[in-house]
Length: 472
Image 1 (cartoon, rainbow, N blue to C red):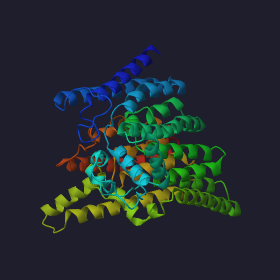
Image 2: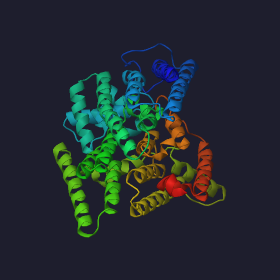
Image 3: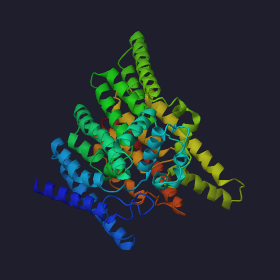
Image 4: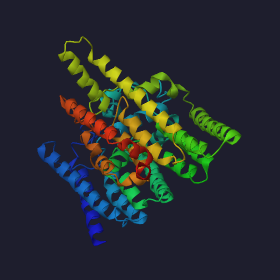
């Protein structure tokens, strides 16, 4: 246990070091004169960046050291809570890192407080000011892509926090900690039910760098969505089916991917019922989902625009090279252009994105109809990861959707998932800018194609979906 304490200490030093060294290079409020509540004068030069990434290395090393104990069943749930506090508090108190989405949430809350509809009016409607300037440029003229529950919570958070941007960020982070707490409670329940280690599940899904960076310092609303979805799956697979459906539906009013929990809970239940009982269960699930969605939507007073084609298209509008399909599309365009084929780059990427979406939908539908009593949890996690990897736009925190679910399954020992949990967020810089640019898409394309060939040719896809027992 002395060794475990040592690694926890190393991770704590890393977390503190990241916050201190990123005082000037993180996703700080704009203009630059509008600083965080504390500032360490380290500048924006090479020294700050070296200090920051050295601290990232310490956090990753500390997390890997704790993982050594977790793999041997020596990480308790109680100890996991303590580690979360030690590693999470610096990120909670420090300036945002890796993303500027918190400022978008604040802008949408202020729009609602001013009597405007965030599904109709973009942050630019607020006019010049520190909130608009702090929002990433690509989202300043874009309406909200989030569900009505989150937009309503944003309204409440901004009202409670007042006009201080620092306080607003801390309030939003506190809101996302609700999702983190739900993950901490739900994952051990699911892991034990599936015969897996609860400490290892928490190590992979909540204590990992990807989770800490996504849910606490970046304050992404994915934490709340994942927490509600995991709680729903835990209840739905534990004899509280209706409540499970309701919580997943509630998660979908934060972000729509939580609805996948409903689909796989129902698909799993269909394997245990026949005839009229199956029809009744499906109808009941649909009714519960409709009641929750309608209730939240009408309660928000924001209308149904959030389910309209314009709102659903928002997340796909930004084409960044860290998205696998965008990189593949760029590579295909490069090859066609070199061959003298007259086609635009935008059209080529759109075609690749459409094909990817069709493949994702086809495989997920196949999984739903071939669940064969293996349970809802593992197929749900695989489906979410597949959906993310073949999406038109991928940000690293999206990977946590499927990873958090799979952490409760036998996949919690996967080295690939551990690598993603350790380094996934590092494809964006401290200030939230993607680190992949220029001709890097060729590297991503080659790695992706090689990975797909290895995954299919080695029949690893079957192990991923069904688990190691069925793969033998």
